[in-house]
Structure formats: structure tokens, C-alpha cells
Length: 391
Image 1 (cartoon, rainbow, N blue to C red):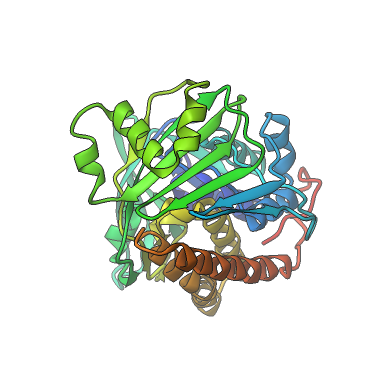
Image 2: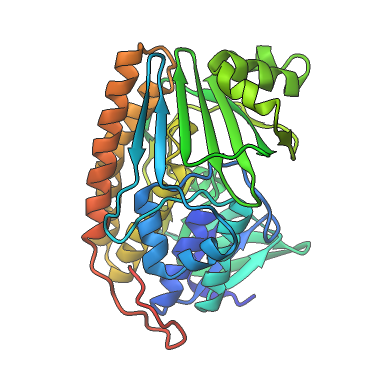
């Protein structure tokens, strides 16, 4: 590992890997580090909204996701107490289908693209601090690699290290918005459960989803207020999982009797959403490190890829004003999505109220998509990259 970089990115999941790829394609010397292992899985709702698919297409990495057997999604069903609403995915901005890749696939493809673009990647690297100069500006990281402590210098350190970000803590990133609600989620993967498109069920007190993903499997999740989940898990977790599914949708529960669960039930206890200050002298945050909202609206990966692009553009521009604009734009595109998600995460709505919330969320996603589609592509500086990159 060299000891001096233009950018050090902590966290090699979708937000960090995408940022590393884009910066490396623009000619920056980039180090991407992660304390985990290459190709590992992660807790995720998997679903990519249209903005995320648009970005993956423009970056030239969508074909690898499709080639890995990720099924296309051509419709989304919203299931309410009285009726279902089916929304077809109409071709728009070059996107004719949605996808929901497993994270072990998506993150690996983005890491590979970052490495192919010239980024240096180091797994098994535990970052435990920030190096600063006498004026308090961040100048690098301190990390343990293979039992050896090292200090790596960088013009900017980017925290893409998730919900409990070390970089956010060390930089003192203040929380500027905090959610009031949180859901806890249990999910598993099922074979023999054919699912044509995304299926979201909203029953007062619970949400449920069926998400077709890789390996002919369907991810089935159920979410309830986080205060309820510990009581449900006092005994048998698989039994609690099926009981909550049955309460949310007896029809889905009956379908599971004919299917086979292929992995153990996994869960997330829930955490209130937040928007944090995400830029400062020599540091920035991207992904869940700086902006997290409840997973019930399945928009987290789309947030991460959007902000990776916005941040990369600001860093390439190279001014303090550009980084400030990154944060302003991120907040503008996020604030209403955050508020609506927080209301949905209460699970205390009427049928009419949650439908109204979904319409508001859809309108904000359309605004976000237009903003992403309006970004002008810039040519990559690496001759090995044949397609234009978007920075």
C-alpha cells in the first residue's frame, strides 16, 4: 500500500466502491479500504430504483449485473388493505426495467470496476482514526493492516463506512435532521416462489415485500415498528418471521408453504433515520455514513449511488464551494424523501394516508431522476475505459 493518495475512501460497499470508481476514472489516485472481505454479503433490501439503474447503465456496469442472472423487473405492485395498484415500468431515460441484485454481486462488481479503473483496494484494513494538521484539517487516516499500524496521507478522506461510521464520528459530523420512527425487519430467501416484479404490501402496523433477486431466489421481508421486534424474537426467530408475515399477508404466507427457504432468517433491529453534515476540511461522507433513512421504502442503494456521483463531481471540481454544493444538492434531493419515509416507518397510517405518502414519494423520485438525467457525461481520462463516465 502506498502512503499518499488524492483520496482515501473508507468502506468498499456500493457507495464507497462507486465513488472510488468514478474518481479513479477521472484520473485521481484512489485508495479504497474495507475492514471486511471481498465479495461478502450485506444486509440490504436489494431493490434499485430507476435512478440507480440509470447510473449503473451510464457507468457501464449494468451488463455485468444482468449477465449474472439478475432478473429484470417490469412492474411494481403496491398492495393495500382494499386493493392492489400495479405500476408498469415504462421505458424512460434509457431504463426499461428495474433490478434487485444481491449485495455480494453488486458491491463486488463496483469494486472490480474501481480496481479496473486504477483504484488501489485493500481489504482487512481497520481504520481507527483521522490524521490532522495543526489547523485541524484532515490529512489522512490511521489504520491497522495485517497487524501493522500505518498512516496514509490523502487530500480528502471519504467516509463510506455505513450507519455507524468511524469517519463520521472522528470528524465530528453533526446530525442536522433526525427521524422519529424506525422499523425492525426480518427477511429470508426463498426458492420456488416465482415473483413477477416487486411486490410491496402495506397493512397497518406492518410492511412486507417480495423482491426477485439472483439465483432464482426471492427475498421476502417483513417490517414492524422496531419497538415490537424484540418481543417477537424472544423465542423462535423463524417462527416469529412467519407469524409476522401471516399477520401482514395471509396470502403471501400461504404461498411460502409451497416454497423452500434457502438461507437462515436475517434481521435488522432498526435505527432512526438521520441526515448528517457531510463535508468538512479534508473529509466528506457518502452513503449511510452521512444519510440514512428507514429501509421500508427500499431507496437506500439508489441514495448511495446518487450521492457517490454528486460527491465525485464535487471532488473533481476541486473547490470548497463545490463540496458545499454537493451537500446542498444532496439535502435538497433527500429531505422530502426522508420525511415521507419517516412517516411511512411509523406504520400508524390509514390505508388512504399511506397511499398519499406513496404518491408523494413517487413525485420526489421523479424529481431526483430528472436531476440525475440532466447531468452531463464527462469523458474518462483512462484510455482503458471505453465508455464515458459520469462525474
